[in-house]
Amino acid sequence: VQLVESGGGLVQPGGSLRLSCAASGFTLANYVIGWFRQAPGKEREGVSCISSSDGSTYYTDSVNGRFTISSDNAKNTVYLQMISLKPEDTAVYYCAAQEYYSVPMREFEYDYWGRGTQVTVSS
Image (tube, rainbow, N blue to C red; front, top):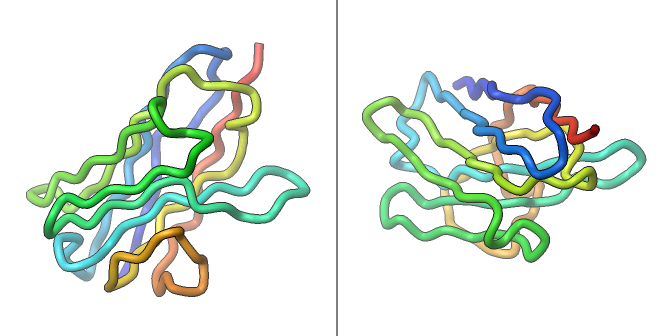
């Protein structure tokens, strides 16, 4: 079982990025995929999650309206489209998988984790 994030980078405030989470060894459609982020000196927080089986989605308040999570079951990949990025969005972004849809998102409920991708929002 493996999750691999990609798409991070350096972007100016107001810019956009799309993160990808590619799964191998299991079928994403059978799991809930979440995106977490951890900024320097802060605890890791749940950003968004999606249940690929029924399309249920969740967004934490600080990203609602700016981030969009989606899944492509044929590619076994989940995406996080981020627009109107702010410096406070700077963090390492991780994708993770669990069997059950549960919000708000709790780290301990997720069984599989990727290694993360750095997102830096700065001018």
